[in-house]
Length: 111
Length: 113
Image (cartoon, rainbow over all chains, first blue to last red; front, side, top):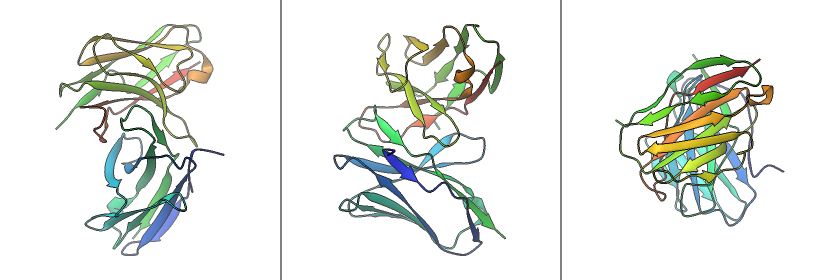
């Protein structure tokens, strides 16, 4: 079983819709969690951190469920520019030396 | 804005060649990382460095070595390239270990024939 698992997609979603996807992690000792965004043939960029209390940034909301060991990302009022691959990242330590990366969920927003 | 620059966007090498991938960051970051990214797999850490002349193995160091002679530069070396090292290589940097944000270079797509 992979340490961090994501549905690879693609999720095909009409513009303006709300879309959500999850990421499960296997190690209950995991301490911090992140979502990165990666555009096609580009480098990953930090989208947002995921706190125990949840985190909201504009149209994006990230949630953590420690009991079930998953994090989620919800995108409201999706835009064409949201099309990308979303990478889930889990950190078991206090430092960023050993981040565990999911393979990503591909999202395609259609006009 | 932080800039992490990788020397080549695309590289084609032959089996057995020695390959150098260069990475330079301009924000005086302490930590630098080399990852590889393959389809269907998450990023995998090859090596990282938290200071000049310091290096630590990541999850998949076999077949690779690194060099960090200056703070801003972190080089990845494939001593004898093999076809299973065909991959996208991503360099990243961060200010401190507890800093959650990694800044990535645009990547080098290496093909080993």
